[in-house]
Image (cartoon, rainbow, N blue to C red):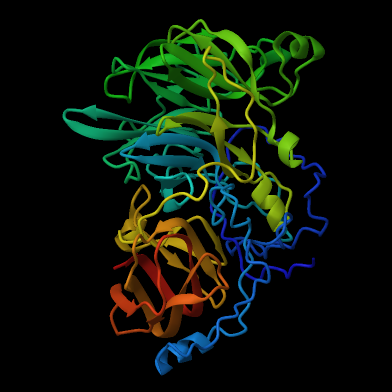
Length: 560
């Protein structure tokens, strides 16, 4: 089947970390055979995306077929007529896939913080780099100064919290040039919950930010690196980056970091470090200790399962046959070690996640974190699936989540990287106020920070914007119970703008249950608009919002 070319633009902010990309993309079975598009001038949007390589969304014909209905009023039929024959924007993943977890931005080096029933993902934010002729360059990670944040209560529908502006002149840590590979933790201090975001200033040191909320605003409490090459026992660490943080059961916290290979010491680089954090979480206790980690490259990870500490990491690109035979690892695998102490020594156990290229045909650096949520274990990691769908091969990464099985004997079973991911259909209560930037899948849209929040050194209130006719958004697992009667959205329209939001169940080109008109009212503020449902909505469904017109934005929505 020939799929039409996507005419919308994917807005790419930031997303990556790790010093050496090694991002050569193989010719996997689902690799696009169309040429990479020409990039726009620097500062503009990302290039026009090509059609997905693994087929369209579950909306087979990608064309709206909603016409008039004898049960609707004349006004409702007039709204429905606006949608006749419009082409739906092409999605960048199937509606049945939960990976990548977002498509409106890139996001790499994911780190999960579980707090108050939600998983918060903090991700390095790649930003496109350009050649002099405007074509996209291979990702060097040198322009990355922000960390992207999303959260979810079901690992399916993700709310976009925007970007934490970390490094550079406009960031909270003005001493830093870059913000790579975040790690997050929270702790009650003086009766108040505080949140801490650790990041790598390229390979030169680890910084820390603090906030009163998991989404910021974040500030720099110490105005310098927390650990650097001048820290005791760190002068020999090639790359002072890729932090991970552990909050232990006794209230103590520990920081893990390091990587790189000095003097071709591939089998035993000796560049992993661990140190106890102070009670304030922004200082260290004593000198960091060296960890004996075979074939280390980068990407520290740390977890505690039962009474056992699990240190995980990415192996390097120089695993020889001796290493393969002895440890069962290959190049750029995620491997793990265990200990009965947070500072080791750790005993090697095995490889648990092969390079994403082994699953998706596109090889690059491998970065992960493992986390427990609602009694189950998961792994977040990055791939280059999204950029391949767009039609580029330059090392820009996206985040996936898949299941982890911890065996009864404490070993971790080999992990499969997939596109369906975890969470199934998810769950969402449509009668609660839902941020419009809560997304399972979408096409053609963008999100942006709104109002004074945009000046925060942290993510703030986001809104759905850059809306055009045929764009759409889907959330999954919306449970209407015995039924809903009306739909409300908080909207704002520019002068002269006009739009309609069509709400459908189960597919974007299905029959509508509501049409909500959006037009300017002379105010600069958002306002709530409500419409009655024109068809029954009960039980659990995928919920689609299909947009007509442009020049308007959406903040949140709910049903009554």
